[in-house]
Length: 401
Figure 1 (cartoon, rainbow, N blue to C red):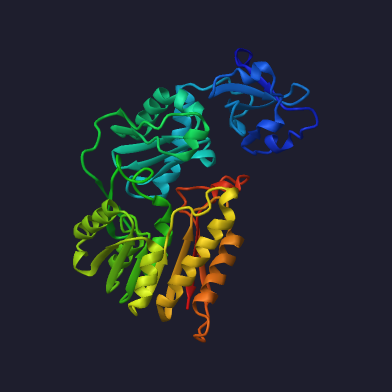
Figure 2: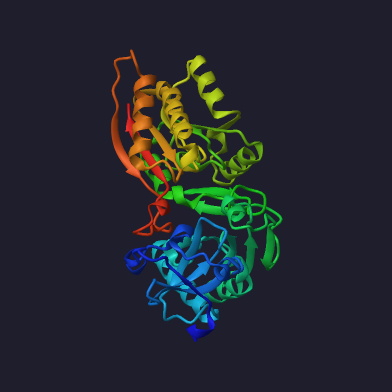
C-alpha cells in the first residue's frame, strides 16, 4: 500500500541514522527539494527514503517549513486511517488513566505521544485540540472521531491560537468540532483546589496542567506562609498553597479576566477569605511591593516564555534575571523563591545561571545567601521525547533564601 504514497528523499551524504534511531524531525536542508516535493500540499503523508531509496519512515510533509517533514510512524505503515488514530489515543489514555484518578490532564503531548505538532488537553467530558501541524489539520475530522471513540468525551474544541500554526500556514480560527460550545468556565480539581478553566477565551487550552507537580512542591513549603504568586494566570501556585494551609496568597497578573477566574476558583475552593489579587505589570508590581516594604514567606514567579526562540534568547535571559533580582528581596529570611521558565530556547543551565545571577544581585549587600533545593519539570502527562530536547521545555527552580 505504500506504493500509493508520494516519496521524498534525503540528500546524498545526509546521515539517515538519526531518523532510524528515532529523531522525529527532518529539516528542509536535509531533503532533495525538487519540483515534485515542493509541489506537495502542506500536511501530505509521504514515505521518506534515504539516498539509496531505502525506506526510513512515514512522515508528514510541509515543504515551506523549516521542519519539512515530521515522523509519524515506521516506513511499513501504509498511511493514516481511523485505526491509526485510535491506537495512538488508546496508548496515550492508558498512561493518563494510570497517573490520574480524574479525567483532567494533557492527553496528547505532540511528538512524545507520536502525534507531532498536536496538543490535546482533557477537561472531563471536553477535549481541547491544538492542531499545530498541517497534517493534523488535514485529518481533523478523523482525529476528532477517534478521540471521541477512545475517550468518550462529548465535546471537542479546536484552539487555533498557537504561534506554530502560522509557521505551518494554518488559520487562527477556533471552532467547535463536536458537541456544544461551553458557555461558562469549567471547574478543574487539582492539588486540593478548584481552578476555573476558560476553554474558549482563555490562554492556550484554558489551563496549564504542566505545572501540577511544581504547584504541589510549592504547597509543601507554604503551610502558615504568606504567599506571593506572580504571573498567576487563574491562580496556579496561590490556590494550591492555600489548599495546603498557607495563611494568605496574593495573586498578581496583567489580565483582569484571568484574575476574575482565580477569584472564582478561590470561592469554589472555600479559600476566598485568604486570597487577594492585584492587577498590573509584573515588573512594576514587584518593584512597588519592594517600595511598600512587603515581605512574603513564599514567592513564585511563573512568567510566559520570555525566550520563545533563539533570536529572543539574550533578551529573555535578561528578563528572567530581572525577575529574580526584583523578587528575591521580597522573600523573608529563611523563605522560598520559585522561578519558572517555559521557554524552549532557554535550556536549564542558561535559565539557572540567569536566576542565580539575579538572586545574587537582588540580595547584594544583605549578607544573605541562597540554596537551590529543587529543580522541577512538567508533569508526567507531558512526557519528553527522548531525542527532542524541545519537548522538555518547562523548568522550575526553588531556592531557600
